[in-house]
Length: 178
Image 1 (cartoon, rainbow, N blue to C red):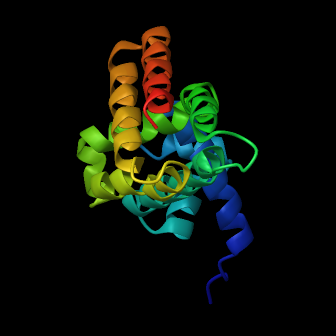
Image 2: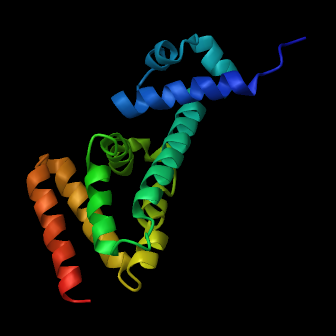
């Protein structure tokens, strides 16, 4: 008779694997995840079945963390004009706390890892529309397009100053033309 799987152990392993993947990217092999989680590769397979299943769960958990983090940043606040909320959110999303998500999901968007999450591009395009539309009714798609474009620019060039200046200029235009 086999052991019963223990969800708390599985959850701890998954969190450690997500932390590792956000810091270093998705590995080609299980060994880095094994080391990061303190579980043998055999235990990773025991808890997750296959490497691809583990990678999918890592992506899903990381995406949930990103949704929670960015969702809180983008949430309209009654005591703050929404362009100021966006300015603060942009700095956090592109700063040290948000960059690991941009890196992980940017690579997913443009790589063969897309097979791990079919439909990711569509989901990643639309999942921030609600808070943006709530904060700036009728302009959410425009704001999302600018954010996504500047993130692609930032990932390609690493020029944070230029991307920040462009985002600030965009917000100034939004407030000038309500």
